[in-house]
Length: 79
Image (tube, rainbow, N blue to C red; front, side, top):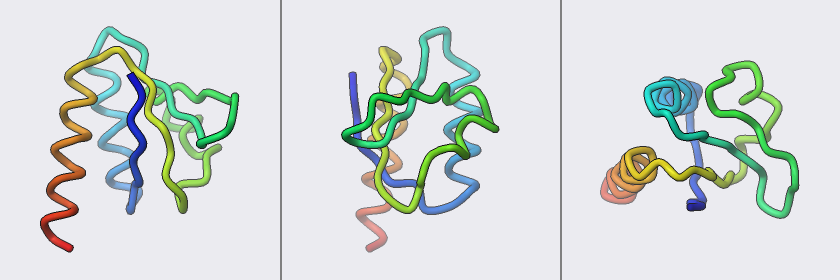
């Protein structure tokens, strides 16, 4: 599954990294239109991406996808 999301702070990126470590499935990130995949479990690897723009989260983890959808709805409700 692929979900596009925008991270607005280092805390949100760190939260994704912690969440990725709790699941058995791979959690990967990539910039849209890019073939480079970064392991979300690697904190250093995460900082190779440009988070000023949306990124795609690629995973088979239903838990991670669901948590990202919830976070997205919360952000939208605040705006």
